[in-house]
Image (tube, rainbow, N blue to C red; front, side, top):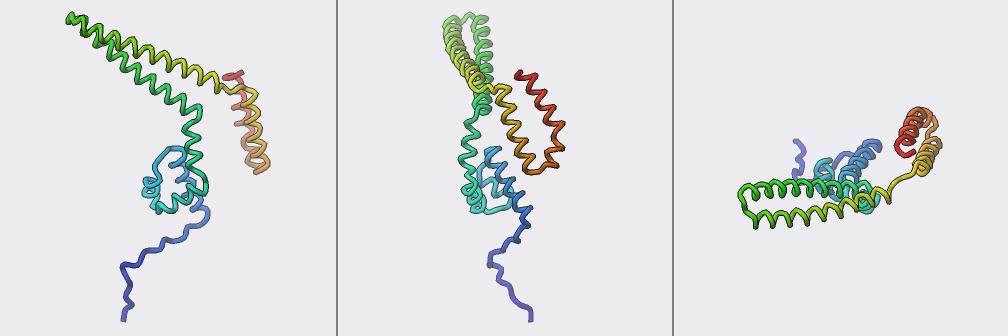
Length: 183
């Protein structure tokens, strides 16, 4: 007689080898922290439970790191540039509407649009100042870059000297490149 199975019993997922587990965890980290995806979405994408993702996130303090990444200089700069692009598009649209009002002789509409354009130009000027200040405040000197670079590659050398040896050409190229950019 064949043994009956209970079809309502929960399926147990097979235990992953450590290397695959770490790769999956790193992928979840990348999606959540670096790319800003939602934990539920990542759980679904990676066929994991929300509890697993939540535990990884809590243990690794992913929320704090994600917040820090979103508040970094490059994000602030990119956001300010995006706002300026949108404002610039709006400014061009208003300029075309001004020309249309001029052609039709609608002085009231033209005046209203010119006032709008002036206010938008003022806002754009403020955002440009913000952008310049962001770039000025967060400019990395060549000396700081070299110190950080040396620290990273010293740590790599202590971690894996063979791997460090394979990066020597890369290190030289990067230092030359940054010397030209920042020097």
